[in-house]
Every structure is written in C-alpha cells, then in structure tokens.
Image (tube, rainbow, N blue to C red; front, side, top):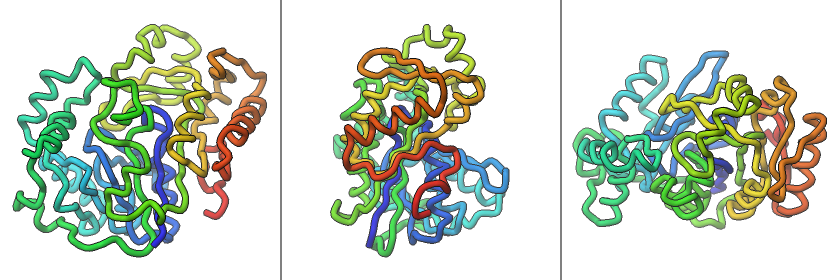
Length: 333
C-alpha cells in the first residue's frame, strides 16, 4: 500500500480540490479519503467545464473511486443528506461513499451553540468546535450509533493505493495556526494516519499554495483594512475570492513567503503546487513578503524564479515546484 496526501499550505482555498480531482482521475488510487474537519470546508472542481462542489464528501466520487470519510471527521446528518442528494441528481454514484463508524456526529444543539459563542473567532457556524469538544470530553455520538448511517459504514481496512484529501489549510491547524482563530482539528498531513495506516507508507505529499494569500473569516493577521487596498481588491475580483462553503468574501494579501517556507518544512510537502498565477499575470502585479519586507518584481517569471529558488534552498525535501493552474504539468501524472 502506498499513500499520497494533498494538503493546503495557507489558510485554505488554495485549489486543493482541483489537484485532488486530477490525481483521483488518473486511476492510480483505490480510495480517496478525507481525514479531518466537517462540512465547514469545501472543494470546487470543474469537469468538462461544469462546476461541482463538495463540502465533506471526498473528490473521488467524481471519478468512480470509493470515497471514505475518516474517524477524525465530523458529520451533520441533514447537511450530509443534502450533499448526497445533490450528487445523485448530478449523476454520481453515491454508493461509493463510506464513513468510518468512529466518525463523530454534529448535532443541531452543536450548531446553535456554535452560532451563539464562536462567531467572534470567525466560525462558519456549522457546529464544528462544540462537536470536537464533546468528542474529546468523551461524550460525543459516533455514526455507528445512528441508524441512518448504517448503509454508509466502512468497517474494512484500506488497501492498495490511497489518496488522502486535506481540507482547509496549514495555518488553520488547531496546533500551528493563530489560535484561537483556527479550526478544531488538524489540517496537517500527519493527521491522515488517523485513517488507519502508519507514516512509513506515505510516498508523496502534495502541498498546495496560492501565489497570493487569502483568508476567509476573522483573523488579526488579516485586518479589515486589507479590503481597502486597491491592488489587493483587484486581485480579489479577478481571482473570484469567495469561500466554497460560506460564500463569504476572502481577504487578500501578498504571499508571505516566510510562512509558506515554514508550512512546507513542517508539513513535509515534497511537491509544491502554486495556483492562480494567471491572476497576478492578468493584473500585472508581482509582489510578496520575504524576510518581513515587501518585494516587488518586474514580471511573473522573475517572481516565480525567486520563489522556486528560495523553496529549494530552504526545503531540501521538495522535489518539484509547479507554477500553473494546469496540474497536469506535475511530473509523473
């Protein structure tokens, strides 16, 4: 068994879904698995120019690959039912969707508590934090105790090649992020081992980053005045920066290369994919933060050359850096 993992290196919304979907359609994997989080996240992909969205269900569903929701995920029954019905109406085989019996259930009281207490921290009000709290207080409900989920339960072991699908991003991790403005689970690749395999089986970690930073929700690292910057507002407009699940406008800032390097190092990412390079090309703005200084470049090529050199120099485990919206440029795919 070999395991590949795709994770976000920023604050989510890095185009992981497009990378995961491309990997899933190669036919290489017997399973695509989600390891953490709930329907507070989401992926947007395009198949034959048709737009599709998922929130909790892994992207393998779009390519006939068994799609597993792991034990460190959390699930809300009504939201899951809605997602299932949408996928059915679009012609996808929802019999491929399975859930670990140990996955925790988000209840309606969890959602009401989330709305009342956690919005000041940028919560999506989907019940995530209260559900994880109850899990670790050992008073949560597992899906194996809810008859509705019986037909989805996955009691087998993973075998063959497995693709692990990350949700959200590195800097939303409960341990690494700007606490308490974080999510309530681990977004880092090591969390994928909760699916039931040892780390020795991990072959490739695809780390996905935008070429500029975005953040949905509240975070002092992304102050409100970013919305007033004309150049950043232009990037937001051209990049269609709205959350897949929340629909909220994202705050945009120049890429923080130092934080990206730290995320690559800690996550152990071996192939780096930098998305949305076309957005900067369209607006002809090429800037990033490096060593706490804002650096301006004359062209996209000059900027990407510096990024690639810096990543390879500081992160020797990285095998390849790809600057493209076309993930087919990744070697070996």
